[in-house]
Structures are given as structure tokens and as C-alpha cells.
Image (cartoon, rainbow, N blue to C red):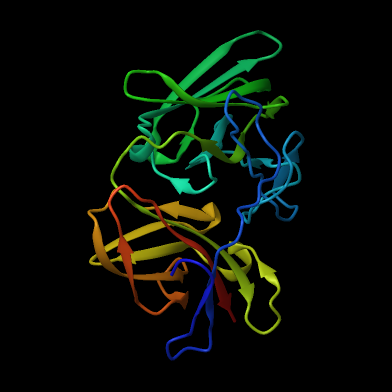
Length: 278
């Protein structure tokens, strides 16, 4: 599956292509490592955008990357998601880089009040404790089990937390050095319309998750994440398949099963799976 190849559909009017393409970046937190932020694009409505992020990715949200989700029962807070990539831009895992926790540190500009939250790295998402409505500066720091900072991301602007609103900072990819010797498999994905080739967001395609089958083990990621990496694997040959599923678990598009060899000490990059959907 390395290089550029095509995977034919298996008895379905959908086609999945596998091709190695570059991972695009858009906007960024400023930090000691190149921790790029991919803001979400979407439509107006109950989502209000805030400035400071360049748009990119395939989720729902407002202009600028950070969005506010408001309703009477919402607790004023920040929500954030993160992903990990190596120095070549390939997706990786918390275990592979030695990441244990992700810190979310925010400071209210008017009062200098500081709030600190820590989440397990492997959660890949977190929501802060309740915050007073106001304007905040934001920093995220990936740490190992000894508390050493492996990578950090400093927001280039401030963000507003409004009453009865959760401010979603979107997806923040972190670059970190891979320290694990065990191999693992990585992939990324996009979606397009089978008849026209038009690019689709996960919401447009009603897609919920991407599932990678490796032998008898399944790994899944939220569709909007756009990329994923498995846990460390033992060297050997694995039967691998990839599918795009909706919220009910129904496959929207899938690849045939193919053998993939994983060698000791080597990352196996499958490239980008392009899911064609009706």
C-alpha cells in the first residue's frame, strides 16, 4: 500500500483510492516546536467564529477556527482537541512520543486570573473547568510522565468565553519527537463525492469515524481528525482494511483487505485514503 496505488471497490458503487499526498497545514499556534493548528470550517448558525486561526480541516464551526457553542445549560469554558505528528508530518501516538499529559493554561486578560487543566494525552480532547466570562490568552503543553514539556502551542490571539457558551479551540496538531522503537501504522483521509469528485467535509458525508482494521484489531478515530496512528505493533504481516462509517456503524466507503508488512523500527505510512461516497 506504499507509494501510489488504487484500491477497487468490493461489490459497492463506491471507490476508494490510496495515494501518498502531503498533509496540509493552516494557521498555527506560536510555540517552541512547530505545533500547527487546523481550524474548522463550516456554516453559520449557533456557531460564532472568533479570530486568530486560519480555516482548514473538515469539521463544523465558524470563521477563524475557534467557535462558540451556546445554550442555556452550557458552562462557560474552553474545549480543545489535539493530534500528534512526527517531524515529517506523519501522525503518531502519545505512546510513541512519550506523551503523558496535555496541559491547558489560560489567563483572563482583565484580571490576570490563571486557570490550569491537565488531561491524559491519549484522550486527545478536553474541556476546561468553568471559567468567568471574559477574554483569555491560551497555551497548551504536551508533557511526558516526568512533567517535561515535549511540545507546546501558544495561541497568537486571545479568545472570548461568553456566558452560557463553550469556546471550542478546534484541533491543534503537535509536533513531537518519536522515541519508541516499536513500529506502528499511520494514515490520513479525505472524502469526495463519487459522481463529481467534489471535496466533502465529514458532516457533508454524514461520516462519524474512520476504522482501520489491522489483523484482528480495529483502531478508530473521529472522522474530523483527518489522520490517525495505531498503537505499537509487533513486526510481521497484517491484513489491513480501512472504512468510513456513519454514527450507526454503517460503512459509507471501504477498501478491500490487503496484506501490509510492518518491519522492526520502521514507521509504516499508508498515505492518504480518499473515500468516495454517494
